[in-house]
Length: 175
Image (tube, rainbow, N blue to C red; front, side, top):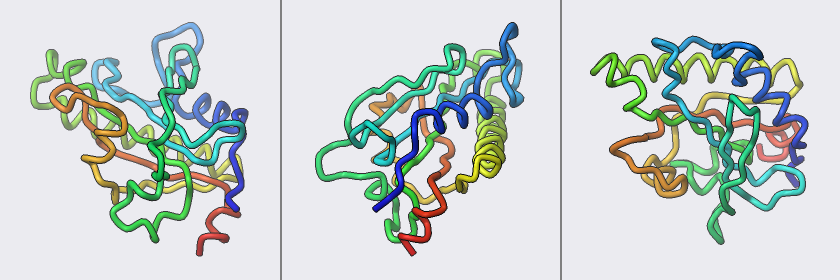
């Protein structure tokens, strides 16, 4: 059985890696023009006290908003191209809201979004390591399924990167 993450663990993780710094508009990662086009979602079946659900993270309020349950019969692993390779039951998905930076940077907005998501991913990996959790960037997800699950309008917002995370005991149990 997978060890569940506590809400305190998720709060510590997101707070240290992604939260807006108090008294400023800055965050703990760079963003082209400080426009912050990247949104963060948590898809998990391993959060204490919650059914398998989809959440959205608000970095300014440092709040995790529960959006909805995972569809019946689906879990995080069912969104992977090769479910047997997915070792954890939580997935952070970074999406880009293109218009936030495209008005200023045009086609360069794509590169800025990818770089920002990479910095955010690095922060997640560093903080999970410090917390004794495990994480790794993961590209093997079915984008169309993620778009449908998150109810994204692809002309405005698309997934650009993801990170799987969990307790080391999850990985050992799933190997």
